[in-house]
Length: 125
Image (cartoon, rainbow, N blue to C red; front, side, top):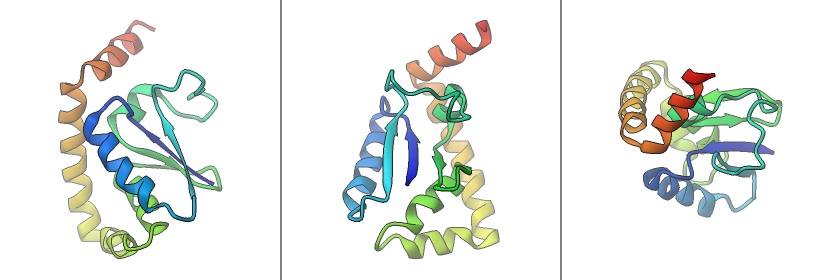
């Protein structure tokens, strides 16, 4: 099973994950919202701030994919999305998409209050 760790307090993220959930006809994924109090991120090898900053996916081998690579992992397992996974894996396009996603993710993170709260808690630890 592939686990998708996503920001379930972000409206945009919820809408996008909703699209993927509806496309997941074979139930390949476990959709794990980061606000779930039963989630032990440390046991998963993840940090809350990093997981809020960029999409994280843990594949069935236990390898963690972050950012564009996380999206590619999702797209590869969804019908009608595989071509996007293929295109996004082309080195030059992957590089461009990574730059764009990192720019977008950084701005999204800076604008969301719950992300800033998580960041301030981390700096106090």
